[in-house]
Length: 293
Image (cartoon, rainbow, N blue to C red; front, side):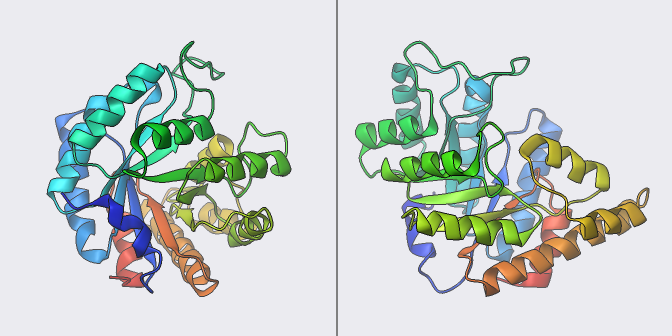
């Protein structure tokens, strides 16, 4: 397995850093699709892959299993880890499992409430915030793991305002985070404004913008509700014009993401992170046009 300790030097390599996000599949068919997607994307300059972690550790074993399979296929792998439902002892055991699996990086997150619940409730002997998880990992493992954390260009949906949101982001970095990956956004102005606010707050670590080509109007609106990503008027108009035509909608989404990435890189972003939902079509179309690798 490639060492994820190489992630940080990637940001100083002189070329845009490209990462993708997978989620652990639930079926054999899903597993086949995920691994085929991984193989299809690999020739296009993918620097590392993250793999998500279900609420309360509901996909823990699959995260480790499929993360290991990605590693066997040559990927640097960064599994997600969340606070949800875990005691400190359980988190300690998971970190040991990650170490044994050969992982050298972690995306440290608070995590969403388990399915059916609307509010986050920490384990009685657990952690309540991602910053606490970052600190815990550092105390338990030193610098064994490169640590990524999440940032929200349009603020976390639960934050009362951007100032408080930025305060907690800075706290995560102070506790030992090495870089930030942002939630997806559709308007680059939100990223650049967020980056300016980060630098003004003394946050100097790399901030990797998160991109997802919107493949339909309904999908874009779902993410607008789910994560607060505002839908630009122009993008909404383009997607509305081709409703019912999946191929045309995908072209619109890839075109939009292509322009986003090109402007982001030109503006000094260290690369980009692709949310791909375990599917390769739009990601391949985008990467072929960019030819980063």
